[in-house]
Length: 86
Image 1 (spheres, rainbow, N blue to C red):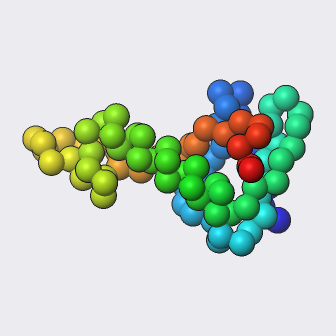
Image 2 (cartoon, rainbow, N blue to C red):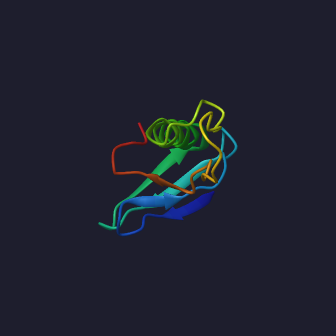
C-alpha cells in the first residue's frame, strides 16, 4: 500500500500516475484517513492537470502554441479532500 499525507493547503504530492489497482492511503490534516484506488487518484490527477493547462493557455498535450517562453507543463501537487475516494 502506498501512503500519502495531505499538506496544510489541502494537496498531496503526486508526480506521476500510480498503478490502477494499487491501494493508496491518504492521511488528511484533520486526522482522518481514506483509501483510494490508484485509478481514482489518477483520475483526480488528470482532472487537476487539465484544469492547470486550461488556466495557463496550454493545449491538451501541455504545449503553448503562443509566443515562446518557458512554461511549467506538469503539476506535482493535487487537491484532495475527504469523501473523494468514492
